Amino acid sequence: MSKLTIWLTPIWILAVGVTIGALILLLMWGVVWLVNRRAAHAIADAVSEGILRPISYVAMSMAALALLAIPSMPYDQIIESLKRLPDVQPIVETVEVGPRKSDVEIPAAFRASELQSFTITSDQDIAVNVAAKKGFQEPLLLVQGGEPYVWAPGVSKPRAFEGEVTTLYLTNESDSPAKVSIEMYTDVETPQVRAIPIAAASTVGLYLVYLVVRFLAPRTAVIAAATAKETVAQPLFTMLILVGVVMLLAFVFVPYNTFGEDVKMLKTSGMTLIKVLAIAMALWTASGSVADEIEGRTALTVLSKPVGRRQFIIGKFLGIIWPIVLMFVILGVVFLLTVSFKVVYDARESSKTTPEWTECYLEVVRIVPGLVLAFFEAVIMAAISVAVSTRLPMLPNLVICGSIYVLGHLAALIVKSSAGEIVFVRFIGKLLSVILPVLDHFEIEGAIAGATSVPLSYLGWALLYSALYSAAAILLALIFFEDRDLA
Image 1 (cartoon, rainbow, N blue to C red):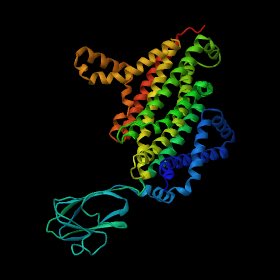
Image 2 (cartoon, rainbow, N blue to C red; image 1 turned 45 degrees about the vertical axis):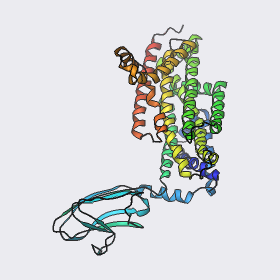
Image 3 (spheres, rainbow, N blue to C red; image 1 turned 60 degrees about the vertical axis):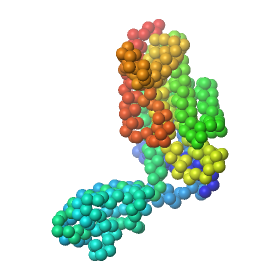
Image 4 (cartoon, rainbow, N blue to C red; image 1 turned 90 degrees about the vertical axis):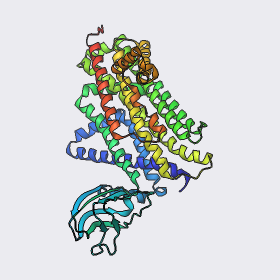
């Protein structure tokens, strides 16, 4: 496998997921077209005119990569593992084998090559076979009473199982019943394919969320679309994208001198860069789009139409979020490419053995949760900026939001530090943690340093926290804007 294929394979797997998601969307649109052509044309217009248009270009680029790179990719392994995904389930059974019982059948369908680990425990000696009439004469596994038989990669005990297994046969020759517990955990031979349905679901979900908002809240969506279009058309947005792309590429070749930890430094630097650029754009857009329109009486003109103040504020907030999504999509793809390439580049520069593509994949998937958390943080800061913009112009807004960003990262550290032992300092730290967003929750530097993955449950709690705090900030914006004199 060439070096190009090694670092490109993880991105190709994600591209396959995006392609599948795009095909699902096209299929759904085809069904709508057959049922209601007017609605189908409205959906097509929404995709071609809104923020989904540049995102669609990114999706088409990923689809082109997925198709053109097939000859050099391990597509046969990927397809076989995808087919096996629904059949790979943990096997957990507890049975009682009577005294002097032979060939007690336990349904257990799995492939030996997909075994990740298994544990068989019994309070009596038992023989485990995959065929009948073997018993203790030709046992595949002999489990001693009270001594669990544990196998995992790297364990000295043999795996014993080979090929495809459909049934286990248990034999107990003792005069007492045997209580047997079986735990088997399997996974497909290429577990990396699990990213494909996740990428497909994310692609479908992004489009559906945009379209649902557009058709359920049309007036709010119009304001959001206009704000997003204005934001993307600004030179600042293009400049931030270009700065992000150039710096992400430059990070690959920067000598960090960390004695083998350059990939971690790249991930930390890239994550921080994308987050800061997104927050900077959100603060600037909120200040210009909300505060300037209020000061310039443009908001009064908009509200003279059948648009309420709530629709105006929520529309502005969504109009800031959509460009943030676009920025994360573009810079996120570039970031994933640079991280994957950095693994191969470092191995070459350090004269190490050329890594497998699975090593590149592992580094790539570990930063995806970090991008999600960085997006949540950017959404919170955008909501706060919208609230401040309803009362204050651009400069005070930037100062206040910048202070909140710094304190939001320091509040938890103040409480945990030695200075936090002082009663007054601890009180101030806890007060800031209650009032201001605890942005330290969205950092994954610890996970990067420890080479661990962020659990899905943590992302769920972070999403809930982000949604609640953003909702509170927008509610505060509505209260501030409700009695604001626009004349």
